[in-house]
Image 1 (spheres, rainbow, N blue to C red):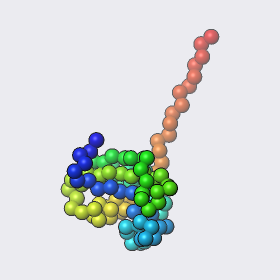
Image 2 (cartoon, rainbow, N blue to C red):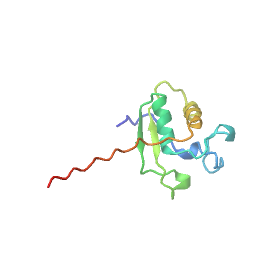
Image 3 (cartoon, rainbow, N blue to C red):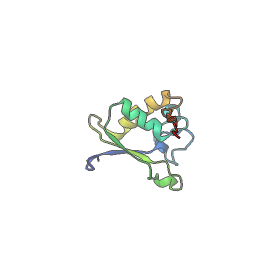
Image 4 (cartoon, one colour):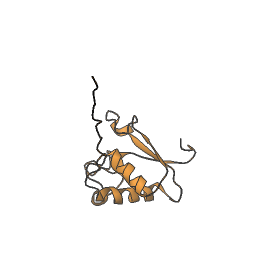
Length: 112
């Protein structure tokens, strides 16, 4: 569990190009991400080597009916939330698709 005194919260809506500023986008459209998902934000945080925690059951207050989730980031080495959002967006924009690792199925061996 992260220490809760000072942390930054990142929602996928902050980065989504299809949303307006009024709907929650924090970046200009030319720096925003197409179809931003929680997995893209998590990948970017791992790439930046940040200490973070994922909460999948939380909703952004402006779109409370959509359960996207959020990422809580420990801001060590980052001066502002705006800087963090720009760094994460730069990495997330380069991703076309974050794929989950394929799940290997166990071969069933039945002994009779």
